[in-house]
Length: 280
Image (cartoon, rainbow, N blue to C red; front, top):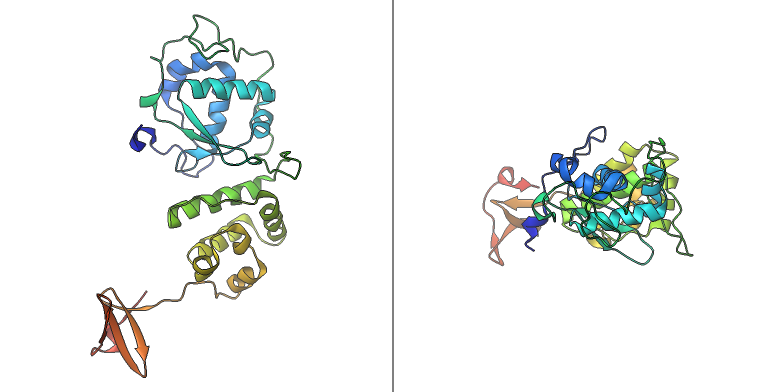
C-alpha cells in the first residue's frame, strides 16, 4: 500500500480540549464495531499526534472507558479487521503503537452491519463488543503504561506521559525519527524534574536540547536531555547551539587571523568585510 494511502488530515493539533472524528465512521462503521469499538477509537483519536500515531496501553484504554481489558482487545481487533487502524508492536515490554488509517482504505461499505467474533460481517448485532458493562466517563487522568522488570505495565502520571509524547513528536519533527524510550529510567528522570519545574518549562528544555550540540554529539535521547549536565547548561543559558559563520551559505573558518570560505570542498581566502559574514 502506498504511504500516501495511510495518511490523513491532522485530527489533533495539540489543542487537547478539541479533537475530530471522521463523520463517516460514526455514520456507518460505528455500527460495525459496536459501542466498545467506538469508545476505543475515540481514545485513539484523542491520543493521536500529528503523524496519526499513538501508544496508549490496554490498561489505559480500559481504565478510561471503564471496560474490561478483554473487551478492549476485542474492540481493537475489530477496528484492525476493518483496516480502520493499524498496530505495531514496538518491543516486548512496550505498548503497541496504533496508526489511524485514511477512510479510503477502510474495509466495507459503511453499512450498518456488525463484525462477529471471527471478524466477518454479520447481519444485525455486534457480537464482539455488544455492551455487557456500562460505558461511562470515569474522569480518570490520562496515563501511559510503563513496563517494569516483570513485564507489568504500571500507570504513569499524565504530566510524564505528556512529556514522553512531546519529546517523541519533536524528535520526529526536527530529526525525522522517533526515539526509543527507556520508560522506567527516563520516567523517573522526568518525575524528578517535575518536582521543580512545570511541564511548559520542561518543554522549553526539550526544544533547546533537540537543536543543541549535545543532541548532535551524544545522541538525542530523554536520558541525555534530562541528565544533570544538560540540565545545568540549560539553566545557565548555554544549551543553545552556537552560531557558525557563513558567506552566501558557504561555511567559513578563521585561521591565523584570516577568514576562509569552503566552496565545493576547497578552502578559499575571504576578501570581504566581517560585516558581510552571516552567523547562523
